[in-house]
Each structure stands twice: as structure tokens, then as C-alpha cells.
Image (cartoon, rainbow, N blue to C red; front, side, top):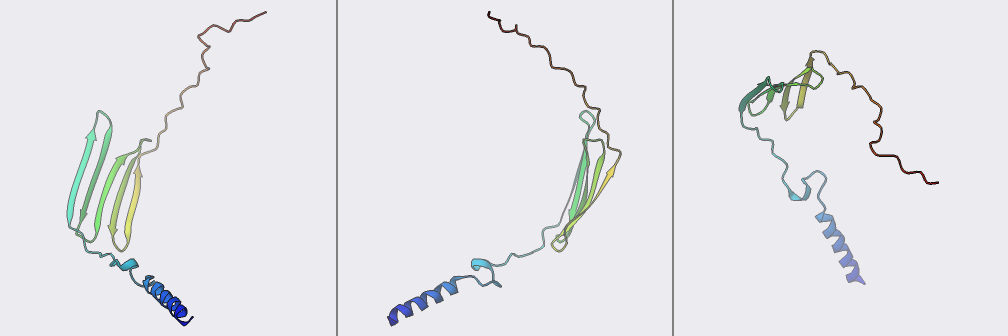
Length: 125
């Protein structure tokens, strides 16, 4: 009887020690490291008069803060301009602007359904 109580107590202690502590990393994984990234700088732009595509993007980073902007034509005729910054403290912060006036095409006219092109079913007396 005493050994059964001792066995249950040891099992409870073993289970309690296996559960990760709330203030520690889960399951023994180390916390993520927030090392600064590599500095970079890039830009591109597209202007295609045949298709009407026009967009651009530029971005640079010092390894800690990334900033840049992009421009794209929207289907309603406006141009969307976005200026942004991103870092590990503030996250992604964007300022969005629109140029131009939205234009929507007139709806297509509706037409009645065409008459069937097959003969009507026969009528039996």
C-alpha cells in the first residue's frame, strides 16, 4: 500500500517536471533571435504603353529599418501610391494615397433572351 502511494507520488512529480514552465521557452526551444538583417537597396519600374501597365517599387534597408514605396495603376483608373517603413519594433507602417478620379464604365445593355433555335415539340391529339 505504501509503495503504491510512493509510485503515484513519483508519477505526479515526473509529469509536473515535464510540463514547460509558462515563463520559459516551450519544449526547450530557444527564444527567437532578432538579429539585424542584411542591408539592401533595390528598385524597378515598368511602363508598358501597349498593355497600359505602369508600376514601380523601390526599397532599402540598413539592416534594422526597411523603407520604400510602390506605385500601381488600379482598375478604376486611379494610381495607388504607398510609402512604408518596417522594423521589429513598429512592424509595417504604410501611408497610402490615391491619385486621379475613379471611373467606372457604363453597364452593358441588357438584351432579351433569344428565341429557341429548335422547333417546338409536337402536339398530339
